[in-house]
Image (cartoon, rainbow, N blue to C red; front, side, top):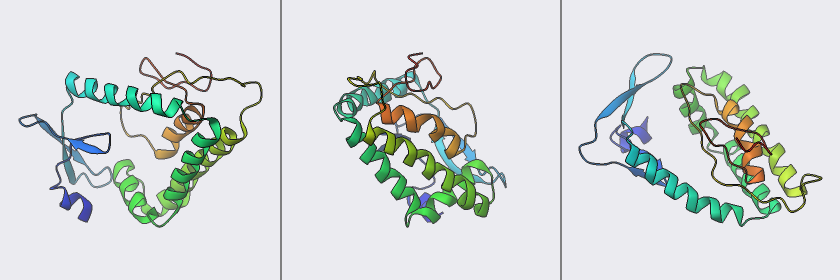
Length: 180
């Protein structure tokens, strides 16, 4: 709650480590799933927001593709360690508000599973999948969410994609080797 208050309960689109807020953009309220209480206002997205996000993601993909499997694995392992570490309470509260599940369930099940879903592809990336010598990443990972999505559900797809430097295109997520 304090973090939301420090941002005036008005967020933007989070792109490249910054909250992008275009003046005069209409916004909509996001509500806590369990209580219906307003949490924050977010801008309604426009095609220009998507263009900026895609440009930034394309540039980042070039950098990510330049990393070898072990380096990508180390990044995923650090992300897993961060989720499992001292920020766990903050992440649990955020996931509880977004997903509408009790905090104890989020901490005991969702967050633990999310950490495992990052650690497995992190190890696989560091070891290198057999038969994929010379693998070249294909591009940007795009995630389109039509509604509430748990962190484990998201990482179940993203973990392997990021470990491989793979992309998901056309409004769905593929698995390693799926170009569609």
